[in-house]
Image 1: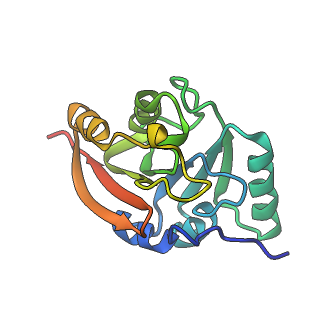
Image 2: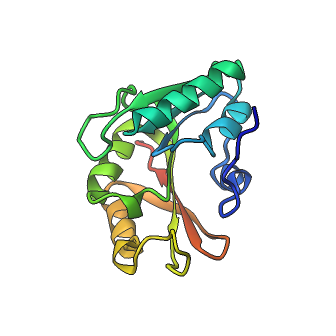
Length: 186
């Protein structure tokens, strides 16, 4: 079976490079969607000793990812159903993730702070949160101007919660990316 990668607007490998994704890492993709655009290529990079969690509220999406992972014999992908906007809703051990991906996700939810709090709860010290979201509304399937992420609010949240901006970068003509690193305790 042929699967569409969905990477026409966002190249997953650019994001993996920016985040420093490597073997043995543990990551989650919040709002992973139907095709697992980032889940499957990430699973190859983190390898057998790493893990990738596909987190979504749509059970059908997770079933599709689980089915494809089974067909491909990809055993390091785990599907997790959750309402990510609810506190402590994601059944992943706290402080266990090296990376959380929020790709085109904050513009799709109403409670940005709740989503960021869940990411913070799951990321270990020294871990990273990657946010990639829309900056233009010119495509028919893009969010409306009112739905666009308020990047200043995201930066304020990161500073208040002990994150440092590691890098900010363009992701094609329609998106922007930010990598935040969680400060390590001394």
